[in-house]
Image (cartoon, rainbow over all chains, first blue to last red):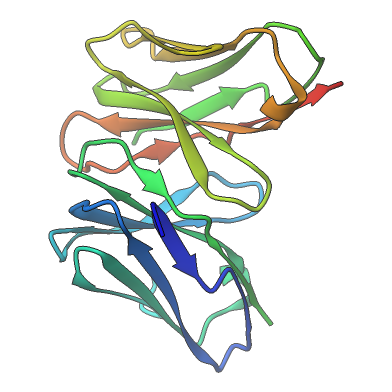
Length: 112
Length: 113
């Protein structure tokens, strides 16, 4: 596999469920990102990791919990979500923090 | 707070037409500006990245310009094709402080055969 991959591609969950989104990059990059894309709104940055360390948390509610075990993998743990959290969640990576970001295909999340 | 605006929000053109997409940003203290393409339900593909010291970048039929002092960028698409149909997003990176990209809402382009 090449580039940035995300699993699952689609997810439907209830408000009491716990699920995790996974992102993996095969580009040897050092920085990874989570973005949220809601209908008719610009992409919103959620978290930034650089060399496995979280460098930005854009005031994201605690029901979203990121994890970065190594520079190639990034997770987003979800629990007690709300219907308004339904969106496309995009992962991206870059060689360094200020360089071109490469995006995965996203996970389409629906919270019922 | 940086705000990025893209006009128009949607555009429909016949095949073969040259077109211009506009992006404006409120804070001119940027490190670079990037144009992306997003197909429906998919992730983003980087098209062009312009550093703050540059005026334009070209890739094939695409040309992006940057006027940092006036807070504007344009994406020029020559000889448009149906395969160009997608949403085009503009994003800026600040030169100081928070390093992450701020995105516009995008221009949804439809090229009719």
